[in-house]
Amino acid sequence: EPEVTQTPSHQVTQMGQEVILRCVPISNHLYFYWYRQILGQKVEFLVSFYNNEISEKSEIFDDQFSVERPDGSNFTLKIRSTKLEDSAMYFCASRGAGGSGNEQFFGPGTRLTVL
Amino acid sequence: AQSVTQLGSHVSVSEGALVLLRCNYSSSVPPYLFWYVQYPNQGLQLLLKYTSAATLVKGINGFEAEFKKSETSFHLTKPSAHMSDAAEYFCAVSVTGGGNKLTFGTGTQLKVEL
Image (tube, rainbow over all chains, first blue to last red; front, top):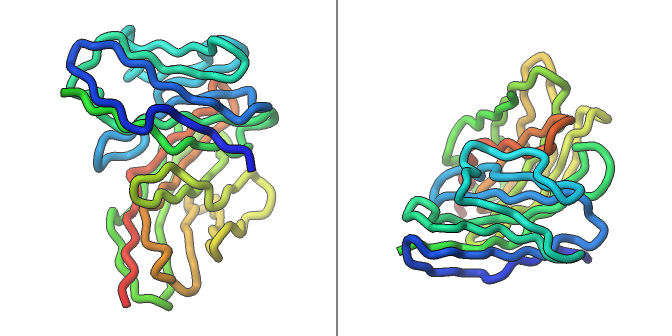
């Protein structure tokens, strides 16, 4: 069964460093998402991406964040200068064509720890 | 903007007992509603979804949910809990338009006791 994959599973970085989180969505999907979950809190939407551009972003997704689909398979989230409060689990999701009733498939997540 | 409220951050049931996890939504347009389950140190797995077809939706692992527009609710139930159901459950809402993002509730941790 097709699945969303994410690498690395765990990333430890120093405050102020740049990190890139990688995702490989399901191959025929067209809509891509990043969410994050701070430990013990709910899952929060960061950004959605369609047709090579951001379609919506949350207030969390400030200038320190960027997303890219550098080739036909990868979807990345970059944090330019990490802060302690960026420590969280980051989930990538993808969705196929059709209405928003279609399921978003989630990857296993990348746990980001900022020291 | 849409939102979801999950009543009860922790629910504890005995094995074999009824599971009832509550979810109420707020949306100015017809919503799509989802229940996801998260096992420890894992990602989110879809249990079931409501997409304006049948109001009673059946999902995986014996779970079902009923969409009640008059009550703006989408509660998750299972007739008989199993130890393997212990996990965190998230209700989420999406609407057509924009990026079709999911807006999640705060989650309910389900504990199943012998």
